[in-house]
Image (cartoon, rainbow, N blue to C red):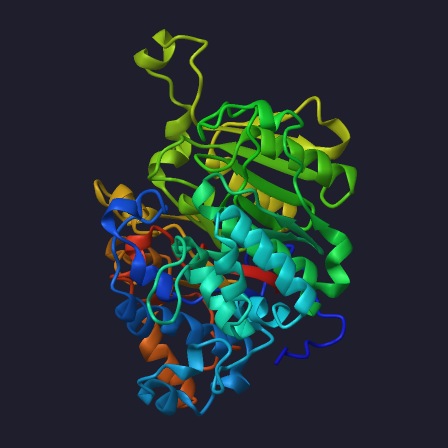
Length: 484
């Protein structure tokens, strides 16, 4: 049955590091076990993963951590029983023993709940069957399923008896990409790849029909397509100045007045411009910074090259940061370089009152320092922690396995992967304690530590399988409420 969410559920995010209060996630579903080598790239998945290991030995730790920080009553004192249950019933949405938190919310659960409404069920089933080109017989067959099983089918693309109906959605575990909360508004994405179209439709229905978002429905922002989009070529690599694509990994709500948008392999300049017009027009923010990064699979979104750890601490890829004073030195190559060279990495900052005269920011460190000092009012020195400890070749190696893609549970307390050894060394050098999720959970259970008093901590998740998917803990979350 539908969870009765508290009246006036708060939807508000105005910082990347304020205490996390509520978020959307999606646990790895049976669709990930259906990805085959010949289609992995088309389905935007980097490798073939072992589903049971990814779930039981890796992602489940992520869920348990989130519950301990956001909704401890759901897990405190139950850890041994949860870990001892071979069926994992605690983690399965729609099941009798599911944790059903109002703070750590699986989008599959919300989808199952809106499908209990007959009108929504008919509309969504018709929409999915239309884009997936299902026969009328299949559409009728889907009508016979329980709402929560139907949600599993829509997401996984397969029936419980292992028959595949359509492609899985392996990227839905990266909930950041379906949308972003900007203060008290929700900006919905426009995926760059056709493989994510079904995700976009499912999330659209969840946001517009689930009671959790009832009081924010008028504050949901959808980006309009180019009015001539139907005349553009079908090639997904159509001009960056014409196509309208945006994914949440390229959007960071860094301060109440300031939004950062990345223009990348997945987010177009045209979409960034449309978002800027909408947000400035509605007075939602007063400053938007556009960070144009190289269109490389290595980077994909801006949250793969930098994230915020604390109000005055950032983790980032050194090769794109143009470190310190070295950035300002000019050598022979600089003086003789063509003046009209199109820079792949560029930062432009726009303000609502002076859109026509943006400020160009020289390097990433200057931007991040300005956010900490000017927007967040930081008095302490701003610090940078570099991927791979900025040692060759570990910076790029560990960025590939999401060393810069961290989720802040609180200011200075972050979750990331255990495999990025050099990056973890860099955190230790800055005074951070590094502790595994498994050890920390046990200390919480034994009352040796408390989520409320933890400071300057990097919590490591097991990541042998998760890291194959090219997305970290930041990607795997969609915060919908934080304290400022």
